Amino acid sequence: MERADDAGVYKVSDDLAIIQTLDFFTPIVDDPYWFGQIAAANAMSDVYAMGGAPKTAMNIVCFPLKQMDISILRSIIKGGLDKMKEAGVVLVGGHSVEDKELKYGLSVTGFIHPDRILTKKKLAAGDKLILTKPLGTGIINTAIKGGLASGPIIEFVTRLMASLNKDAAESMRDFPVHACTDITGFGLLGHMAEMVVDSGLGIKIEANRLPVIAEAFEYAGMGLVPGGSYKNREFRESIIEFPSSLDPLYMDIMFDPQTSGGLLICTDRKCADELLERLMKKGMDRAAVIGEVISEPKEKILIE
Image 1 (cartoon, rainbow, N blue to C red):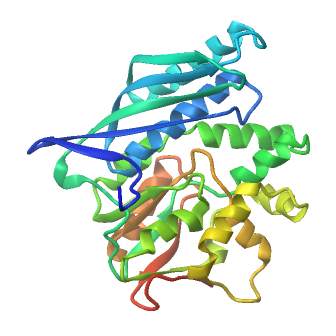
Image 2: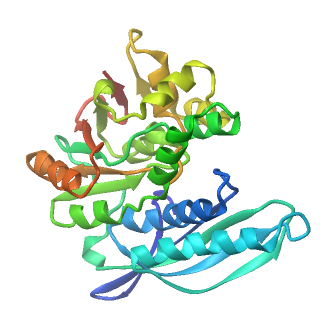
């Protein structure tokens, strides 16, 4: 609990541990089927971030039965079930309550060998950092809610959020990965800060190498930045150093709360390019090496 890892892990035997996590939230897209897919992908992501494979799941449902037709709930659950099937996960039950506000998600159990558990806290100086998905979904979701996002960008972001981190997790098992986390509600810098704090090391990020959804810059420039971005920045900006010449929109994007974001993988520098090539061959064509672990300054994030 004190390390704020992405999921809980319980050792069953010398060669088996179970990973447990849960996540649920209110709709972020209008289509109920895609909302189900996104919520399921997001819930399973923490298991992938720990290096494991999700195996079973249970639905978590809050539904306003008096305000919405039950067909909406059926579409949501179908979306979630289809995403679970894609991940090789078995739905074993769940629980639902009537609520004024619609919410959906999963409780997920995964498997992993106890010796292969990935946490946030085993950074090594010289390691490279790879991000597997582009940033900006929170900003674009804000634009969607404001009715300002175009059809093509809505479709792109919806499919991006619904995409599993399965291939990324499977790819990194063949490489010397020292730490990993997934980028969700605290934004890139918020989750990166969890890796740096108490590590005795620092991180340097090259802003111009960040994969970013192009429209996120446009919408952020219009002020369409979610409130969570400002909260994330307020909480962590004391450990972040960035040049005055840096476009302030980069800070909005790096603190932008992501939904079902990519993995941030910390790997030996000698293997970083090979791992990146593997990820790109698996369809993660926006994956990028965005920075490295440094010895000094300790427990700081430098933006260049």
